[in-house]
Image 1 (cartoon, each protein chain N blue to C red):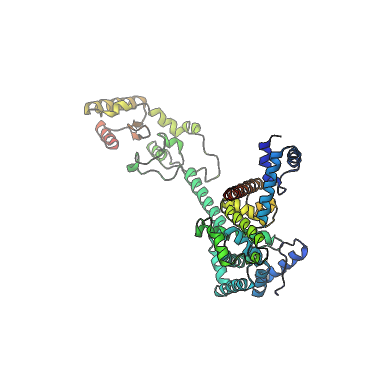
Image 2 (tube, each protein chain N blue to C red; image 1 turned 60 degrees about the vertical axis):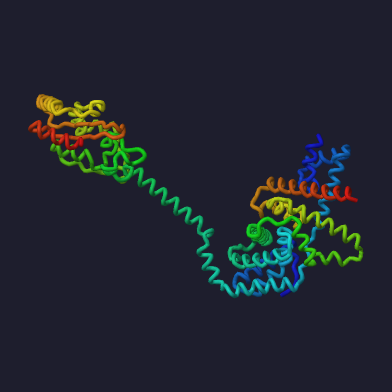
Amino acid sequence: MNCSAIEQWIPLFVEGDLDNQKTDLLEAHVISCEGCSQILVQFQESQASLKNYLPPSFDELSLGQMRKRVLVRIEESPRHVIRLRSLFDTRRWAPVLAAAALLLMAVSLGFYFYSGRGAAVPSDQIGSVPGELPAPDAAIDHPQRESSNVVIAKRLNIKKRRVTNPVKQGVEPPNPEEILESPIISQIEETATQSFSSEEWVEPFPDAEWDSRFSEWSAWSTSTGITNTKIEIQTSDPDVRIIWFAPRANSNSSTRTDADTHAE
Amino acid sequence: MTESLRVSDDSGGYAAAISHVVESAKAGDHSAFEQLMIWHQHKVVSTAWRMLGNQEDARDAAQEVFMRVYKYLRTFRTGEDFSGWLYRIIINVCRDTHRRRGPLDRMSSFEAEVELGGFDRLSDTNDVEASAMRSQERTIIANALNTLSKKEREAIVLRDLEGLSTEEVARILGSSQTTVRSQISSARTKIKEYRDMVLSRRRRDL
């Protein structure tokens, strides 16, 4: 054994805090090493000096006065007052409060995630709300919300579908792929073949262009027999897309006015 | 009810006596509580003195310790280690006192003790030279203890001066035994080095 390791063990060895194996090694070492043996003696003297550090004799009179003061304080603060104080002791209630806070947090998070990420963001706040906004195809992602689905149903003269929250009813939410294949959506998807690209929308079309576009749509929808149109407008913000479902207009002008208003 | 009781006695008699008195004190018997104080006052005040370094603080701390014992006695479960529970309260009160008082001047505590006659017991001896030597050693140890960190001092007082086992010290301080061993090793080394330094300086001055 080298001396530096032994020197580290000596402070524990002097009071029997070293394990048996190290004790044996240390005892064998100090027999043959004068330096470590000397250090051991110094530690033993230091410990003996420490053990002699006895407290002063506190006289009975002062201790009696101390006891009396304690009893007076106890009398002055009756037991029920102490108990009442302990009722408001935050350390006592800390675990309960922590558990309540965690439960509240869990319920809030659950409500947030399972209710379609909370209330819909008001239209005037879209773009100003930090964090993730609903995806452009929010109507597909969140079929339980009374939004585009209801509008679609009315336009197609199909009986209004009952909107339910599958999570609240304890059933698996529908697969988005299945929703895409549902009759309502598929009819709409068939009509949603005309759209602007974002580049085009950066600079609004001149009136003549609008007229031309809507004339094309009108002719196309008449020829195909499709009665409704879905217009998707991708704004400059990639998170915001305006989706508008429109019935085929009787005249181009009225349809165009609606579209203009909506776009604005 | 003023008979003494060795608080370090681990026998069943001690545990039974403590249990009986604690139950009476819990029920509101003030004389039983006073008996608890009588049995433990020397232990409380001497431990507090070793932690704090002067009599006045030790007496104030002891008073606060017994107030807390009374306040939390109903939380003490029968059969639990009363001595360990009491040590935990002493440690907490001394920590609060340290926080309130701030760092103590290294020389002040022992000098104050001498002025207050705290070591009268030692000066009773006729052997003046031996008394002076012991007084020197006590000064060295008192000042050496003031060089320790708070944790080291708590560990060394409980282990080497109160004579508790490493396991008991770890339980009282809420640490692992490894941590306590490390603290007492460091504390013993610092005390020894401080003592070596002072003694060698004195030898040089002679």
